[in-house]
Image (cartoon, rainbow over all chains, first blue to last red; front, side, top):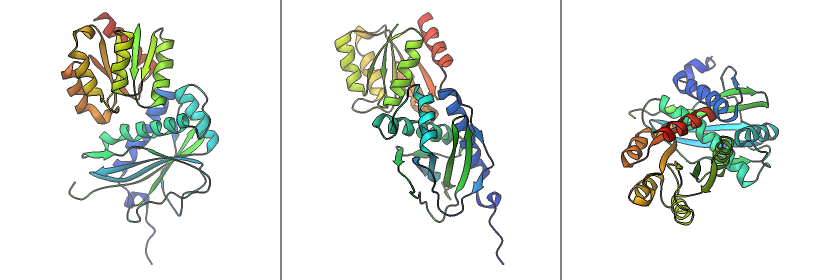
Length: 164
Length: 121
């Protein structure tokens, strides 16, 4: 009988810690919001239940995607703390702010992942009940995050590339 | 102090504008390097420009080079606002005439300290 895959065996912790540090740092410095990262766990099944996701792709020494997903009310409060004014969900300014947040989180983590990697421009998805699919060969780790404005999650589907 | 903020992200411009106004500065903005050069032409020299690296049309590095090539703006200080990703580019910008850089994410205190340091120089 095959053993269940554990997070330790599936994912290099050196790829997870930089994102925990960067999400704390970005929200603390830019929004004055303290973030608590919960125990990361392997993603099981599809990711649904969030309303807004910021997505960034990695290529080079580290490849895959990073998705930061929020419930609508949490995203609105965090964006307001970030830009220090309320922005209506779905407006271009709101989308730009979510993209900038995700870009900053990925950009701050990138130097600590090892090797030379590039990040894409961020994409922002707004909707309900959507699924964020990822490369089947890459294990995905969920980092649950808590803030005074509510919970959100970082989904890491990244891996070091052989020979990179 | 009269400050020009150049960033293609409206969110970043909002953050920088709010922070700089809280610090007592007068702020104008531009969403790309060419617009930044146009604002300089129409509004005259600024004491300080905060410049993002990845901006359209005329990028941050090109903006610094163009400004430093014009003696009319010799006294204007320029600060690159960038992510840690672009550290090698920061060195290039400093070599081209940028005075300082601020790494994102930053706090209001970090921004204030950099500006005060430049004003005192």
